[in-house]
Each structure stands twice: as structure tokens, then as C-alpha cells.
Amino acid sequence: MKQRKFGNQNVGALGLGCMSFGGMFGPAQDEDSFACLDAALAAGITHWDTANIYGMGKSEEVLGAYLAQTGARPHIATKVGIRRDGDYATRFDNSRDYVRAELEGSLDRLRLDRVDLYYFHRRDPTMQTEDAVEVMAELIEEGLIGGYGLSEVAPSTIRRAHAVHPVTAVQNEYSLWSRQPELGVIQACAELGITFVPFSPLARGFLTDHSVGMPELTADPGPFRRDMPRFQEPNLGYNAATRDAFADWCRGKGHSVAAVTLAWVLEQNPGCVPIPATRTAGHLAEWLDAPEITFSDADRADIARLLPPGWAHGDRYSDTHAATVERYC
Image 1 (cartoon, rainbow, N blue to C red):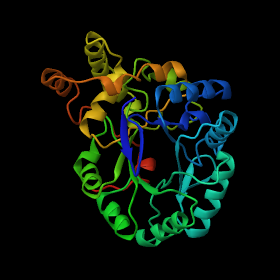
Image 2 (image 1 turned 120 degrees about the vertical axis):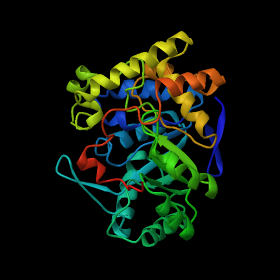
Image 3 (image 1 turned 120 degrees about the horizontal axis):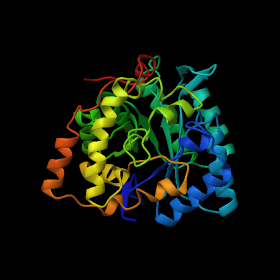
Image 4 (image 1 turned 90 degrees about the horizontal axis):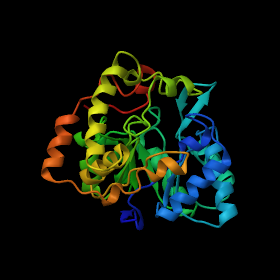
């Protein structure tokens, strides 16, 4: 696979989001997760992204068991900062004691003595950004993390954090149906030499050949996607009609929907490393050729016509989840 710069390292142009290994979007069997990781490594996907709250540690445990069994050592990122009180209520904590304690737990589950990248999963609004970054700088100095990142933040927060200690990566949702980072985040990352990491680049499974519909939403063990207005009727039906026309175009070009969707993301920003998520080797195989796809001017015009900016019906988050991200425009 083609390589891209990630901090001071090179990784595969596509990364792997590991949220699904924690059972967040349906039951996940460890043997299937291992097969997916085998396929990722074989394809040159060497940046893997997880978090302490994915399956309440389960995703990290799966990765740790795999790394211990195989001896593989990809570029690993995990996250901290979201505290769950009960099943779904959340609050945010970027405090020194909490961050250190959670890193210790993550390292234990991952069976590592160091992670390459440690994100603030969300910014704690009760703390000054500068004070929170000092904690990350200490961990870097101690050799416990290789660098730190920010997630779902505004350009202003990126610049404040970077002034204290250089930010390695910024992770915000970005895809053909979620383009807000184009209004400042992508530009700030490029200006400061920060790797931009689009998460949910396949629109949470909506822009794939196994698209999310009501049967999949009903089968989800939790309400995460069901609570999102884009996945609720009548929005879901409107969005599906638009997606189906795009899917026909992709098939006419001889590519999967997922591969074209990822190729579009890769083309928008040569410095980005998107992290599509899956828990099966079969689904992963459907988008592996994305870095090899090139678009003509006519292709770009067709995609812009089929999926123009703002085409999606409904917000990307429920009101509850929207409160967890920084809004800046």
C-alpha cells in the first residue's frame, strides 16, 4: 500500500478504526477480529486506532491479545477523556490523575509499555487547553507515548494546544456527507504540519456496498446510530435514495462504493490518513484498492453532482452527542 507521513513515521495511506472490535455495532468474535487484523497487516494497513471506551476496554484487549500472539507492532493510537456514568451518560475529564490512570489501564490491555499516539477523545471544557496539554507533554517526556492528538476540536483549540507542545494528529469526522473540517480544521493542520485523521470516512457504514438500513440499525446493540437524525426516518429514506444513485455510478466505474468514497477522502488532503472501521476481513477487502483509484475531472464533476456539499438530510449527531464536540461555524 502507498505510504503517508504520520508525525515522524510512515504508515499505510489507510488506517484501521478498531471501534467495532469492542462490539459497538454488533457482536464481535475474537477470531473474526484477528482475521481482520491479519488482512490489514497483509495489505499494509499499519496505523490502528482504538480507545479506552470502545467496548469499555474490549477493543484494546483484542488488539493486545493479537499483538502478543503475533509479535506484530503497527502504529497504535488510543484515546482518553470520555467518562461513562452508566450506559450512555458521559462527561469529560482531561485531568492529570485521570489521564495517567487511564493510560496505565490502556497499556495493560494493549500489552505495551508505550503507545505511538494518545488522543484527548474530547476536550474537557472545565480545563484550560494549555493545562491539559502539559499532561501530554509530560507523558511524551517520560517515553510513555510517542505523541498526542486531539479529536472533534475547533481550529482555535488546535492552535492553542500546538503552541504549548506540537500536536501530532487531529481526528475529526470527515466524509462525503460530513465536510465541516473543510472550514478550518484541515487548513490549520496543513499550516502547522499536523496529520489530519478523518474518522467515519465511510459515513458510519452508510457509504458502502453493505449500507446501513433499518435492519442493521435494529440489530445494533446500542442506540448510537439510531439516535442520529441521519439514520432516522424520513431522513434515512431520503439519504438512501441519494446514496443508491451514487452506488450505481461507482459500480459503473468498476469500483465498490466504499473504495470510491475513501479515494475521494484521500484525494481531498494528501496529508490525511483516514481510519475506516470494520470487524471483518471481507468488508476490509472491499476498500483496499482505494489508494490506487484516480479520478478524472469528469469523475469529480459527477461525484459533486451526485453528492454535493450538504446533501445529507439530518444532523450527524443527536442533540446529546452534538454537545460533546466543539462547534466553530
